[in-house]
Length: 382
Length: 139
Image (tube, rainbow over all chains, first blue to last red; front, top):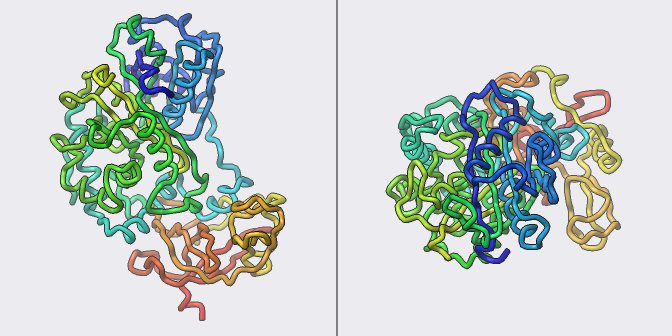
């Protein structure tokens, strides 16, 4: 993708977040899409491309009444929406479509009209070689590499707890965050053990919600009412569908590939970045994200976060909505990370970073299985 | 373990049959590429390093080290109390998920890089699962 050739001109979440038992999963997609169309000042007839995960783009397009020329059902977990943005940019630049709607909706907590959970069959490789050992989903798989990471890097459990503390500080500035009360390292470490060494505040929330984005060619931004947010760089990759087969337990290959391509495409230097989102399904993910993207050297992210550098007032604000640990996490959180990056670039976030013009939004899919990185810029970066 | 019938047991596929036949016979079978010598897991009838279809099946030593793990504290119907979900590194190189058994399920008993040894447990008529236990305890 040519830097800044594509812009986000619509962005919205569902009207409510948290517990939404009154809406099915498909309606969460639609609620976000309708809010997003209003934000972009367009009608359904203007949309000619649809991308979605969780629900198929077929279901979303039919439900909303869209006749698309282009669809993308890439579904590689919670970072799917980063990949949709990257694919949409390519499709728009190739003339396959003009106005792409990307939707997410997930009844993660209330489980209303939720599609069957896929990929867990007993004859699959994960079904044969991981499931028999009593895994409880992400809490006992995503977390498995971390003791090895601790031993190799000298990172401490106090530093892990500080990720939850830091993000709660941001959530305290965000009226839409699910959890807003301050917490301490001691409180985090003494909370209920979920999967040693991870306690409850170090595991993501389980909530309902959705979000949607509308992207167009940058040449069209004057036709839309919102301040445009430009895509400066994009990257994607996948690694292994089984956590036991991740090649390096201290570093994600998918993170490294996706972020390196995004930085190369954008021409952005790390020192220029004002704001970072790192998908935090669990508290160790910001360590891997900061190190694999090149913001910290190997093994230094724990101290960097514990020293307050990513907290409010720090030099590198990270997960400013409160993250999956405190803001919300419906299951495929990447959409909410993207929404916060767009808000920061528009200048309208609840915890707005003054003068923020470049945001790096980094997503994970599955258990370190996939990754997508989107670097966004305000009009000042053109 | 409380009730093995509550485990999610493997359904064997053609490409993995040698592995599960092996565990029933007390062997941990790996595959090796005859062209590039890569030893790999999970099973597939070609080499993931060089794509060669010229491969061999052989029994591993069963010796491994504890590479990483979590201790699950949420209740699971197949287990009594907290239990480890671990990844071990086999002497031959590949890593695999397992449970560390026959030891107390606490961090002080589960030290990274400690030596572990495979043990097989028949959990159904057609499946024996490979578990690992501390190597010193099985001599």
